[in-house]
Length: 362
Image 1 (cartoon, one colour):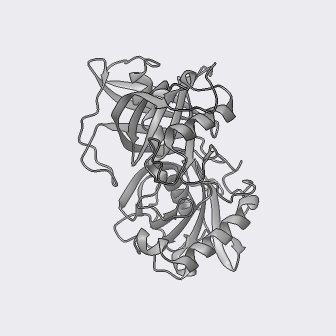
Image 2 (image 1 turned 30 degrees about the horizontal axis):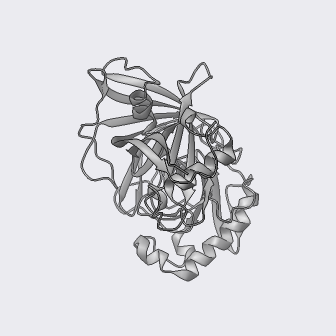
Image 3 (image 1 turned 90 degrees about the horizontal axis):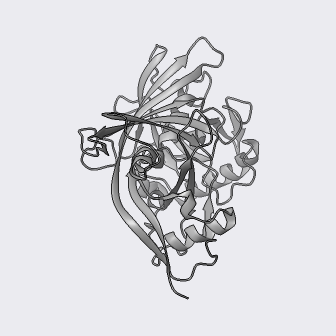
């Protein structure tokens, strides 16, 4: 069988990297599409016969099309390739890969440049939520050069402003999916929150660690990893996620007092290994838990006394800064809007070749 080719672009979005496709270039059937993506990215843990990076943060896919919704420009489906398990997960969003959707939409001709800044309104299919991306565009092209720096990415680039609305219950159906601010599971107090990403917050000290260990140290701690997996499996159904064995959510976020002026210090397992950085929407959910009275972060988080909060969530490789619009008079406090800066860069574009696709494009 001769090889077939599929157009693609590869972009770094935030602190992740992925392949971006037009939906029209992939099979329309979900099961067929997923088989294509596994062939494209690589099915084994090294992804030796594909373009995946053998790591969760570099084995991501974005599928983009024009949106039928009148208040959105494009639809965006995020697909996580589960490295080494020969399967995909479309349950979560990815706020880092989202940062590349604006540049991709413009580069692909889905959205026209409107001046020095171009707004791209995105419908996130994984959650049904919306985000407006403001992309720097000069001389009718995306501008990738700039002075904005984000932790976890070397150098600087042009900013991509991400403006979120109504993130609560993105995957679980409600901000507090268990109905409680605190749950006791396996003798451990946890706060489960979904404000863009399902996250389980736990005190680091309750898990027998300090909270400033390196990801390598935590990943080598088999007792810790086993405890976290036991908690995940029990909390999945309580969070309306069903069975989560092998799923990318919920993220397990161990917290401790901030070390460097942030609202909280974190170490996040996504899903089984601790990563060097926290995800964009995971950071939003973590910050949300911090402002909820009575959560596991109470007495630990450093919370500004204002409705407009500029906060940063500390992680192993730096901090992620977030602007929160909070209604502190609501019970519990309600986050009305989230803004943050990411960067993105087009890395490559061309054709991917599949040697023996399991299905054929119609």
